[in-house]
Image 1 (cartoon, rainbow, N blue to C red):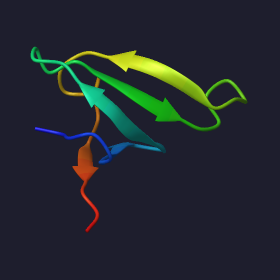
Image 2 (image 1 turned 90 degrees about the horizontal axis):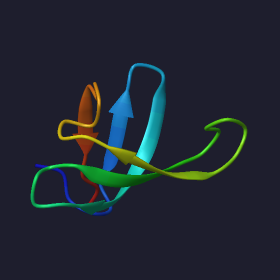
Image 3 (image 1 turned 180 degrees about the vertical axis):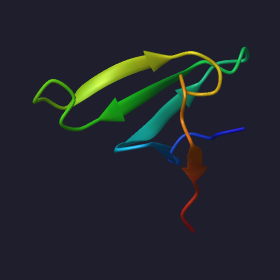
Image 4 (image 1 turned 45 degrees about the vertical axis):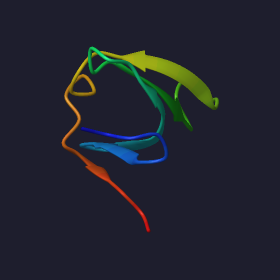
Length: 56
């Protein structure tokens, strides 16, 4: 399960997990999303994310 601060990875995009809800849905911060830095909501599993990276 992802944790705040993890990187979330899609095929050709990456974001930072800001928060995770009890149901597994999450809020991310993503750059270059519609040419802006954007806070986005995703369902459990990150809406097709291929994985997560935990630094440290």
